[in-house]
Length: 393
Image (cartoon, rainbow, N blue to C red; front, side, top):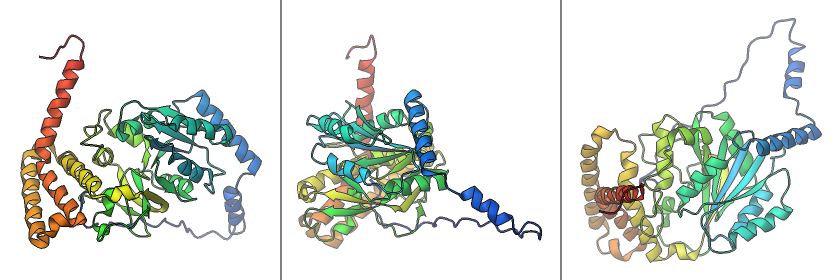
């Protein structure tokens, strides 16, 4: 998740330039006719034939990006949640001219997730392929890597199994990607669908549960700010991922009870390679949040994992030779935040759930450099043992 700080409003998307060259006297009557002919939509039967042709090409050449868009649903034991997401995709509007597909990546589920997909495939529209893929390595980062490898479109939109996209989500995502060719990733406008009322002052930590509200105009994320979109509702350009993101992410494996920061790691790699990252409010989405997500123990464990991942996500935007200095500066800033937080909230810093989450984030961000060094060493040792001819020493 992104750094917990007040969002800075970035420069809004530039308006499209209007081409308005004065017409000569002899061309005024023909120009409107030519423009009308140029923008006249193809007949519906021609559109259907073209879609069928592209779908056949996608089947014949699975490594080619011949489709317009791909929706990926990463799920773990999503038997109960997955149908609602698939129903939202079935109801998408304005996609008649798009050739698109849906991929469900089963991330090592032990329930009936595979059977749910099989049941939907029996009645799914033939012109929108619904595919199933299994990823045995536990972690959303591995599931997304798998999806990027098998997607057949230049734009890939990621949904979790508790994300419910609005009726125009697919069309809004595909249009934005076409209009912004330098966008490596762009996030959705995400609001919560709460099973129970959130704790008081929840808005201070809502971003950590993938809730994103940055206004009604598109915004580009400034690399100098430590704010980025979450993976829920994120659309990535496949080329940007393949050319920027390493095959092995440092944060792909769990930190504690779940992975943390692996979504930011992906977006930061793209941003480092010069790709733009945007917020697109036209991509509206509801994030279903059950009552269990508001339990104090769950929230504290979540913020502990986010804090421990901080060193890695912070250093990705820093030149390597500056790491030692920036590590010390970040640690000093974390100490300052801890002290200020304790002075401000006193006993409430522990008793109040939201304040305790913030304090947990600051404390484990301070510990993060030491944790990440130990994690790197363990990963290195496991890699050495896994090589042929090596045995544990």
